[in-house]
Image 1: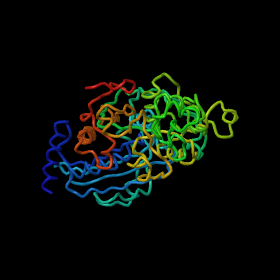
Image 2: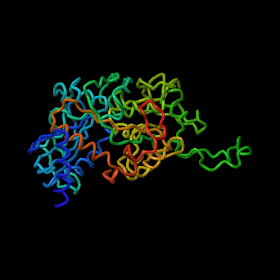
Image 3: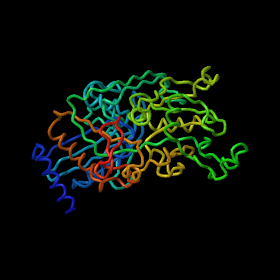
Image 4: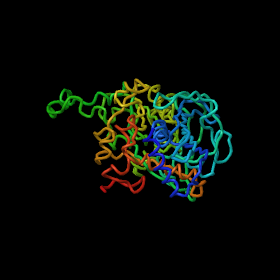
Length: 433
């Protein structure tokens, strides 16, 4: 308790220097947007409150269906915080990166809630547990103002479009998404953490087995030194750009046994999708933008691969799982748990594979061996209420400290300070600091 009081007093003092009022307040900060950040904040937000509050930290999370689709959502709240008695509540709710920025900047609203608002976890319809016990359950959603727009990329990085079922092979209704660059005038931001992205395939995809040219009837005499399974569980940039631009439709185009490629993508507005466009495609190949199902004549004639778009990262994993052998997609590296074979995650037939021979984990990010990653942007209004803005800045500072990285994310996510490389923007090749 003494440690909490002292730390709360210290951060409370920091809040004063930011112009926050020196009296107790009831403060709510609703974070909305990027699906990749959800698991981070369900760990980091209660840990932050636990470090600065004397009262117990209550938390809950859940996945519910809102007006505009499924929401992964969570709450952390505590009383008597930061040495001045504040009662603080954080919520964090997924949709997409673009929509997070549009909501916080009052350029759009969602779920029929009105401009600058969206459905988030309902504090009055949740079953809470006390941190650090496993989170309780969010049982309902409610419309609320958004104070932080979470995005995998800068607003200016958007510029994609997609047309297809909302939930890929699982339906959901046909949608047309146009994600134009987002105006971020009037917004401040912080970028406390970096997230690696990886490619994922169905376990029955032939790239899982690799190539054994030493035993190949045609090439064996030339490549008797070829290691068994070389190219196993790996995509090169050449392969990735060819697949996600639709230039190839069968794994045999890369020398593997014949197997139809089934492409799973995120819908436009996803920061992960925009990162793929900016970091991997890099203007040298254009992303697929139209859905093509297995019965599409263009697919049946071999002109384009079977192609699906998906609203969220969980929908992406379901697409790879349900499209079956030959399916390939992309998501934040730890989306299916820590183990590459998926045994630690929720999608047992989905496998994380390497990109350019490296796994997308914290070690390869920090040491400049892996480039498919992005800084995570938290946008908030420049003229936000002083007390709320102080809490946002304190949360940014907490998340920026590598000592506060949640254990559940530590193998994958990094903070900017520990990186040996940096990106000036989403389109820039990483450079050494």
